[in-house]
Amino acid sequence: MPHPVIALVLSVTSTLVTAPAPELSVRYEQPGSRSAEEARRLLKDSGVLKTRLRLPERVEVVAQDCDTPAARWNYDKRRITLCYSLVDKVRDTIKGISETEETGDHAEEHRMDGALSVLFHHQLGHALTTLNGLPDSDAQADQFAALALAADAPKHVVAAAEARHLLAGHAGIDHLSGMEESAAFACLLYGTDPAKYGPIAKGGWVPPERAPSCSGEYAKVKSAIGDKVVKVGS
Image (cartoon, rainbow, N blue to C red; front, side, top):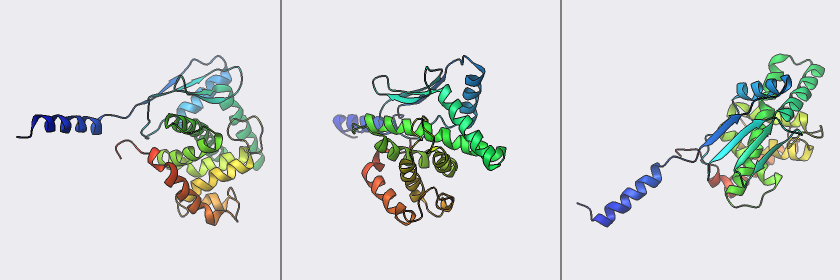
């Protein structure tokens, strides 16, 4: 029979190992307009507002009406906010691009799901950055976002790279603007599995001269922060 102290240690250790990870809760506030209602529907139908990652603390996600189109992470409240007006702006932009290219409804829906996944995972990246005590920046959040998105939603990886590339030249779209940032993000996604995510390189969303180095870039980022991007149960 084990010594009482040893038994206590084993019991505590078992409790720590099996304790559930802090949850990510999602709340959709009542929209105040028809466009906001459509934005809420898009968010719900996309199914992107979720994660299978172990979070350092409980995080709340709130979709709501806002004065300005934005997405943001509030460290003090441990809250990610996604504004319906930003979703609406992204939808209008994606729709315009898809109509110009005559790609059809399926491609438009695919791109929209990718864009929403990027918006959410970028904010989740800010959450993972700050909750792990690291200096916050958009670049650091993007690194967490790429690793998290690949782990959470592999079916959205190619669409996310494409959507961000298409939106990179459009100002005023939170965390999706900027060609250099878009290429760096796509490179990390591509680098997770170049064979599986070949369309990212084929589509030109990563510059051809950079594509061969993406596996190395991904490995470097994973070595630095990969221990903080872990699925529940792993």
